Image (tube, rainbow, N blue to C red; front, side, top):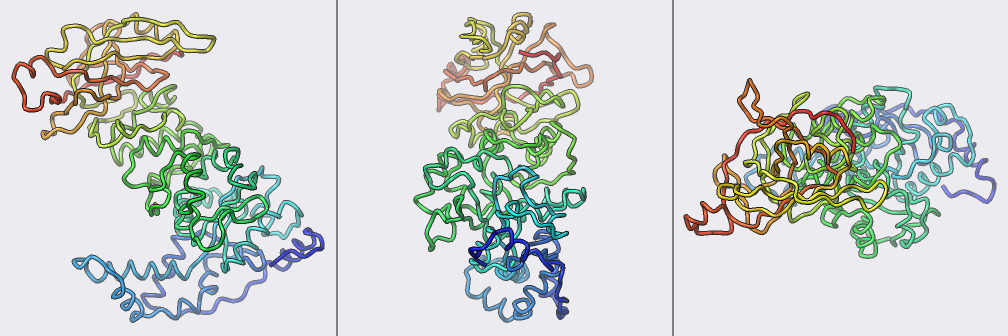
Length: 536
């Protein structure tokens, strides 16, 4: 499907002409294998595709016709032979193994390529309506044509691109596409990444594809991925089916994205497994989206969640995502954020940018706070006993717009029962500093303690850092009337707070423990209420 020397516009006119012509799909025999294909095609792949040979739409129904011969050739004997040829769990029952093998065969037959690209503005990309109506737009369709040419040369009959394969005027279709996007990329045969601003690897630092929100899942979800430069030339010669495994690309890709090769080359089809919420959010923290809602929508697949899609809900979309993930898999690192809170809830962040760079030494292998409940105006959690602190020093801002740097020290006399800790450094504005000065009590709440043998206790290790909330009370000790639990308010800070454990409690030292560098503390319930709104 090479473009000839005559005008590209003329070529596009010819390939869009008569695009509505359809071959009548041949009926397929019924049976469990055919039904498995139907179920997969109707639920696991995009709503429509582009036919790479003529750039017309192919519906899900028509996919049966495209792959009819291959579908008809699959037999139960073939499935059994494939099962016997691969090693599997000897204790697994026949039916689940058979279903997994059939799904693998289905994916090998129903192949399609999918495009990952930095979308241009809507006026410069052909829409669903453009392709449906056959409007000819010359250079606007160049990317689509070249993508289909590339896919066709690689042997694919079907391809998908977001700019024209989604009818954005259909709210139901948009909702399905947003929720299923990660799955569609995961089920593609190959994801073709078009880097419109790059000719070589040396240009990747300036490539906007690596800075966009949606392209994060497009980088991680596919089984195979190939990078192409702005002239549609592959960065990696033939022979490697997944560029993420190529030595020439591995280090630049890791450095630019902050994602390890282990994650980049893993099977992420069911979302990101075995990595913390904070770690995943740190990958997204430096990426941008044109729509505020896409800060959340572009991350749904990574956490393997779905939700209602409503462009217009604004920043509520992100806090709703965090709430959904926290409810599904409660973990302390949901709270490992700093900066401005969400307008929806004081304990939730306003965007992925609120999560700082992930630190593996304190972010992994910590049980931390998992027993918590988020209500409309409060956060109830079970944590280690709070560590009372007080202001030690205040460093003035280094310049306009810069924060105060406040050092808090543990209040003397508390270490007999709680352990001994280093100072806590807080960066914040004038209003937060005034709040601390007015407060009757200020305490640090450790979020990521180690697990202890008893579920009612948490372990601390001398010499290690711990992530904290900073809590305060303006009117002295407070207790909730209904639960008889201490009540506090949370102080927002510009930096992620950490406190070092520098010694065991004196009471433990006197007892002479077998491991004097560790100690356990009983967990206690606290209630954090919504603080008064202020900036700084």
